[in-house]
Length: 298
Image 1 (spheres, rainbow, N blue to C red):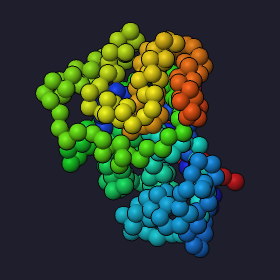
Image 2 (tube, rainbow, N blue to C red):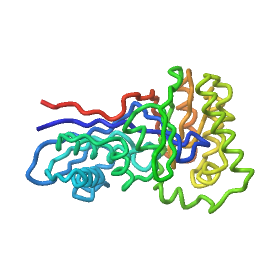
Image 3 (cartoon, helix red, strand yellow):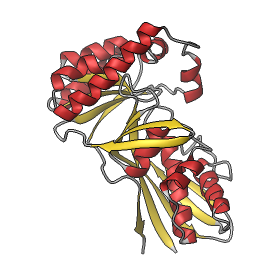
Image 4 (cartoon, helix red, strand yellow):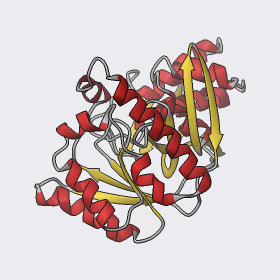
C-alpha cells in the first residue's frame, strides 16, 4: 500500500469574516503514506527541524484519532512534504489534520460523512475557516453552534491571491491573546456591514468595493500592532493596484487580491518588510476548487 494525500493551503478571515470565511489556495502539503509495522514520520521542507517525528506529530495524531473513531488500528509510515509556511496564517495545521483523516479513510476503506470529519477535525482545530477549505476546496463561509452550517461559493476567477510571507512566526494562541475580551456595538455593526459587503462584492465582481469590504475592527487592528510595518505593507499593496489587502488568518502572512500587476504588488509589499530588516517573500496563487485529494503511488 502506498498513496499520497495532497491538501491545499487556505487563507481565512479576509478582513471582517473572523472565524467564518476561508479560501483554498494552490499551495499544497503532501503526505506519502505506506504500510508499516510501526508508526513512523519523516518530514521534508517547512518545519523539518521543528515539527515532531513521533506520535506528537499532528498528522499522526489526526490519523490515529480517526482510526480510533472508526474502531480500526493500522500503523503507517508517512513522509510529510511541507510547502506551506508554519505559523503564518495559511492553514498548515489544517492540512495535517485533514491529511490524517483522509489517510485513515483510505487505510480503513471506510468513508466518514462530512459531520464526522468535522467532529474529528474539531478535536484539534475548532475553527472551520481553515479546516473546511482544506477539505472541500474553494471559497467557504461557515458558522458553528454545536452543529456546522456552511456554503461553498464561487470565487471570481479574475482574482489571484498575492501572499506576503514574512519571517515572523505567530502562534494562533499568541495572536488570539492580543484580542480584547469584548467589542462595542459600533464595532460589531461595522464588521457585519463589511462582511455582507464582501460577499456581495465578490458575487457581483464589483472589485472597486473590496477595499472597503475587507476593513475590520475585530482582529486586524490588534494583530497589526504585533507585526512590524503592518499598515505600511497594506498601503504599498493598494498603491500598486491591489483591490483588497488583509491579514491572512492569525498572521503573519498578509494577502492581497488583484487581477493584474501581481509581481509588482508582491515586491512592493515585501520591500516594506525588507526595509525593517525582516526577510520576506511572496507567492502568487489561484483558488483551489478541488480540496484534499488522494493519489495512488506505484
